[in-house]
Length: 273
Image (cartoon, rainbow, N blue to C red; front, top):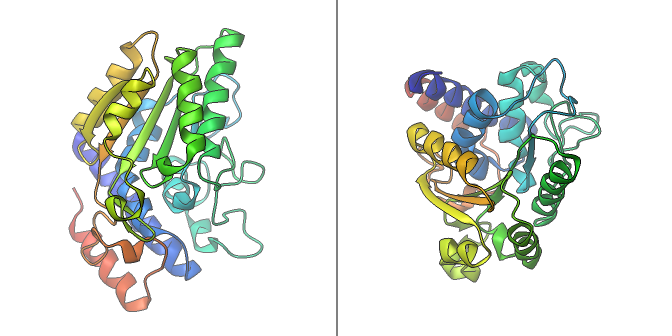
């Protein structure tokens, strides 16, 4: 798939995120927008998945460990054909299968329920180990927030993954440098992130998380590396694509009103590839 086509899909994903959070009048648009490009590439280029057979035992696995960015996952699943696009308007409604955090029991294409930070990545490590033990070739990808890696459970999972040499596993850290209360440096700095993962026996790659050429190169490298899991540190902009949300911690967990929703969709329309 050409870069411009991927950019166009990612733009639709961002529109879906805005539409869904606006309809819900709640949610987490900032961190959803920052990981939209990576999720687009994973679901449209990288992973072996099939919307017609979402439970195929040989499929690649994806875990959104930063589960509050569920609007991004739902938006990609809708574009890929796992769920109807019109259902995005039901985000967070009491009777909806699209809740504020992913639910594997009710949402096609969701491989793991997540939300408690650190638990999703731990499950991803277990999935990768299961593939090794069963002699399966599927790969496991998990996206973590950079604020999430302040959780100790993340490093227990990383230690285990490195020790077990899980080269079928990719950690993807969405490094937008903002969490709910401010910058990472102000809250509880996990820097330097790269050296920490290297110490846990990871192959580490640093990329621009909004550049599809760099995303492709990193994921290609991850497949070639043997004897180590890979950690991709992707530098991103929180709220990417919406001017008033970009690099603003205040848009971590609130939805746009009618006027701001219209502005965001107009900006994204203008940003079409």
